[in-house]
Image (tube, rainbow, N blue to C red):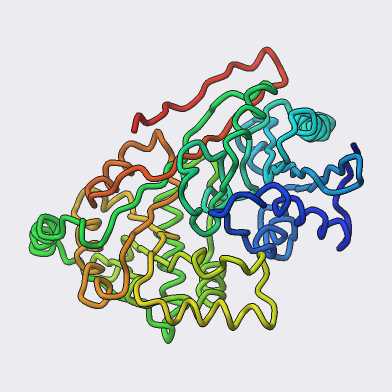
Amino acid sequence: MKIFAVQNKKDWKQFHQVPFRVYKDYPLWVCPLQSDVQNIFDPNFNKYLKDGEAQAFVLLDEANKPAGRIATFIDHKRNREQGTAAGGIGYFECINNKDMAAALLQHAENHLASKGINTIDGPINLGERDKFWGLLVKGYDERPYFQENYHPEYYKSFFEDNGYRPFEQVLTLTTRMQNVPIERLRKIADRALQRYPFRMEELDFKKVEKYAEDSATVYNEAFKHSPYFQPLVGQQVMLMFESIKALLDPKMVTFSYYEDTPVGFCALLPDLNPYLKGLKGKLNWWRLPIFLFRLKTARVKDVKGVAFGIHPDYQGKGVFPIICAHMHNEHNNKYYDKVIMATIRGHNIKMIKTCLQLGSEVDRVHVTYRKILDDSIPFEPFEFYKY
């Protein structure tokens, strides 16, 4: 076998070929958009590469065919701020061959160790937990959601047999619009609205710059103490809104205010994977119309939470029930069914309880593993939620 670093278009083509070989007998698998994956390694798209690095690798078998892949990540800024020497691995895929898997993991470890890394987490991404994070350990019999890792069951032994230990849970909880206890939430929302001058607004692209700034303000206050936090500026949020404008339903993107002060936001986007099935991870000139036709003609869609936050000064004052009551309207009940709340950390009991208030259940579970290369560093995993 041979392992090499991805450096050009030919290498990337082989990198993207690996999952088609791995999942050829997995009918539920939906190929992620290859551009979503490859953009993680492009500093023009991934802000974390301004002070970080990422490298992809491919393993070829004896027949010189792609049989495995892996990537390494280092967030130098985070390491400086936290006084650590941590790195990550991700986008791991491998045929059912333990020797090849061990070789891939060892190669990635050697690469990171050569750069002074002593703690490795994986599978992770270079960025926030909003996509491609963790190893699937529950949900093998379900189609993956958009930008969610899907894995064969045998990957678990690959990691654990090579010295990786479960470190952190990432949960996906789901409910259905009809299961949300909306009458109870409306009563709480009404009491909050009588007590405080809260109000709601829906996304209006004529004022997108304002909403982008307001979202960034709330996000930065709500998540500034999270381990992988990187502050946002309004321009970043505005570009994100513009990039997914064709997919957004303004009634599924809302903002809450205390008088004129932004205090919360919630954005849900249709789960795109049902419409990407069979398109082989590409939206070129002839696949894009197929995707858009499927999306636009779907009578009822599932929606996935892509952004949510409440300013810490206003938490516990009824903002969450107000958002739920506002979004649980006739339009949304008609066109949407399942509500997907993804990438929730297993030890974030407060957020889990918030999701459970919507009548949700734990649907998928991913686990991040950790391997420590320095015996003097203690292994201190997060608490796991018992579902």
